[in-house]
Length: 103
Image (cartoon, rainbow, N blue to C red):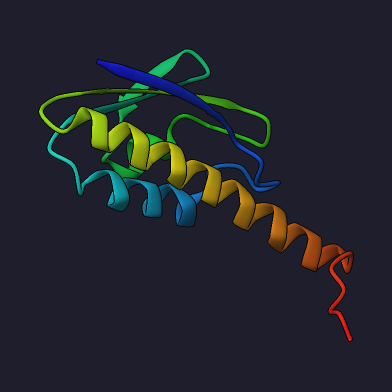
């Protein structure tokens, strides 16, 4: 079993769109993917289960992956979570008007 944690940086939390994207991404792997937050543990491949975590901005998600492709899955999920947080930060910056194009 492999584990890692990821903090939600999206001001809207883990709402339907990112939860759906995460579930779809997790389904690529054969391993069992469990996600814990706020005292609950759910199947990381199920959209509604992920949304039931009530993960708001700042919530720590803990991932546990076990199975035949766990090494590949855990590395890919870590990269995915970093990317998801970078996208959320970029969108928040654009919304705040703090991103400026270079001339």
